[in-house]
Amino acid sequence: MTQKVIIWTIASSLMLAVPDQHPYTSAANPSKLAQIQSSSQASGIPQSLVLQVRQDMAKRLNVKLANVQVGQIESKRFDSCLNLPAKNEKCNKIAHKGWAIRINAGKQSWLYHVVFPQNLSNNLRINWLQSLPQSVKQQVISDVNRLNEQQIGKVQVVSVEPRVWQNYCLELPKTEQRCNSTKTPGWLIKLTKEKSGEGKPSQWLYRSDLDGKIVELDLVASVGNIPQKFNADILADAAKRSQTQPYVWKIEQIQNVQWSGTGGNGPSRPITGTVPVANHTFGWKVLLSSPKQKWVYYATKNGFEFDAPKSVPSYLIEEAIKTATVQTGKPASNFRLHWADLVTWNDTCLGVTITKPACEKTPVLGWRISLMESFSTLHTFHSRFDRDVRFAGSGAWMPPPSANPGGR
Image (cartoon, rainbow, N blue to C red; front, top):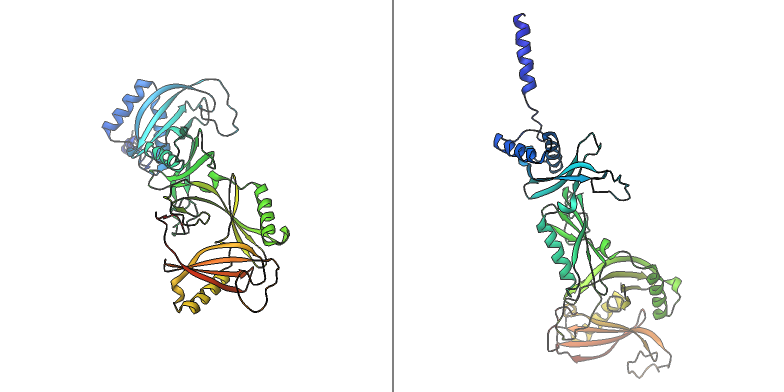
């Protein structure tokens, strides 16, 4: 054998002995590798399958293989879906010898189901329900219990799906903050409650990042769509209140909302002096429009209500404030809307006593508008439906005995 051939043979042997240095396939240090081998030998699982699941987790989390460690390994029997069927998937009940392997990387601890690749081409799946971090699980369960102030029924996490959200807001609309486009790995978590309570969703969907630093209720998916019958009934109600026909009105927007006695995007409520309670309510905010009006309704599974203070035209409020500044000599910034009602006046003078012109006893649709001045005085105005604002009087206002932070 020539010297060149000998050198080439030795070099080839050394090349074959060099391990693959890909970040997902590089071996752990010798002591960790010994622990992995000891654990796999005890369960009878081939080292190749252990390496396969470690590589899979490393790739999904984009971490080095050295940071992915094997936890508990348990011998199992699985069907053709590895006991983890996808939606509408048909599973062959023939039992395949396999293993449930707990794999750890940082704060993540995932449970894999794995069988020999010669038995199934898709020979490993992740049990996501058993892989959700306990801290995230407890966080969403606690939030559902908080939203159901009456502790009735048991809250259960029924499904977990891994997601890579396309922004830091987990792809949920956030009007109060800007969402950067950083991809955020995390979870879509579905929970149910044995008794959800009147007006509460029957299921709750949450979005989170991997570690639970960001956890958000997916309100749209939890509450669902407004019943179609409500749309027709709300349009009919608006037509009746405005003394028009339903075709005059159209629904501009339907928004899923939640509110409580302590705040939220809910219907207007007068200040009553009562101590507010959480009383979380879930439903829909419905925006309607006609050629001259834009009205707001709120609906829950139990019905709907018209919100007059949020429906009175802004130009009527502005006209009332302008009149109040003339009456008092105070700046416009001293006044704000306190309440409004849609009313039908008994005469053309809108219930305001004047001498001229004479008042005809003809019903007139309009608004009663109350302005608050510096939390001390209420000024009342009467108007027609879309014009003619008249000052009706003023009076001292005293706050209720018990403050209501949730009131207007």
